Image: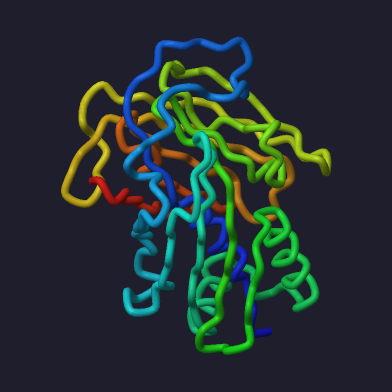
Length: 255
């Protein structure tokens, strides 16, 4: 099957998109209450282009790394829609299949996993050209000077935000969201640096790290969201069931 595990790369990169700036002093009772603050941010202007730099280690040569296009499509009172596209070929999918240890699965099981992940992220997969397959999604987020929330878990329902970070949170704070299919996702602040220790291209930044664990995820053990109070989302670290880590550095246009 030529589509082998394009969905796993979607999981790695769908979050590549957002920036924010400033600090917050609010402390809402419910961590998933809508985040306030300034919504007119430089990195969320329509047309702003964000860049992702996955560290795929030795298993994938640089020339085989999928090409991404992450552009802010619209912004309305802090709700940001991202036009997200990733282009790749069969050589990449075969390498990914090997890395994940899923080569032994039958094609129908792989197709089921692909369809599950695509539905989870509201994405489509075009395999018409096997040398240029494309994943497309338009995820929605709330991005302000006080934090970041997603509407992916709620399938775009803006009345049900799921917080990635609020910049007044403390290490140990945790919260959860139960999707319409009954799957529970839990997030927890596991790190907040006191010095510039997280590398983004040529810079080092102070960051929060939010750990995400999803019940019964077929491929991943956890995701770590890395955020900065000025630049927003600056990294995503993906861990598979065997503990392999794939870090993705995210560079907002203002950095």
